[in-house]
Image (cartoon, rainbow, N blue to C red):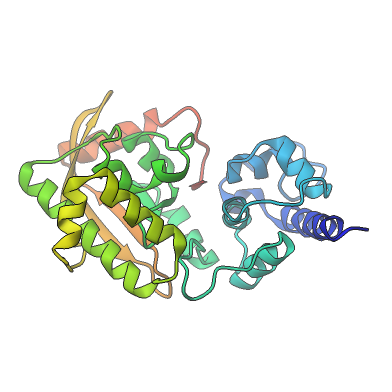
Length: 289
């Protein structure tokens, strides 16, 4: 058997084992209905990982032997793999696991379970370069479902400085504060991950695409995110102003962004409305990219 055949066989066997052991309820899927096995169906893994069912089938059958690192990261998050299991998955897929000098999108299972339970506030998780890693249904209902977005479209800094569509509106003061914070955050990330090619490419392309970013970058600005307000123009609920906090998950370099409203406020009532409206394509539990 060829080397690629060995890779495909080992990867397929591992995926089937991890899928079979995963409790649907633990990943936010309805537990009802008749199931031939206790674990996830292939269709459910595909949905959670943002892949086609056919591709999941080919992976498990050893016919797709060169999955990208992005695909492996998505599968890892969907199956709630531990750090050791994620490393094994990358090796089975023919890639070296991200090292200490590279950005990581791994979400520890404990943090994932905690986020699953915080469903009354819009939550999103980003890596150190502000790439969107996952979000909950209320975040998607508020800001728009990002499921169809790919690559740079899921990067907060790229979207802002290149003028991609956004429901968030900023006053001049808010805009200046936000831009200074994210540029400073990226500068800090380059100090921690000087060899990460994706991060370096993002900064290079941002400098070329946005004079505002290039100007701020060249100032050498440093700093951190702090609590701020965010105003969202929602097509159904209208204008919603929320407090937004950026939290660094302990033991990781992930940013958890939580948007909240004071109890009894107009914004709180609108969030309750959005929790009912939702988005037609989302399911219970956290969505993954």
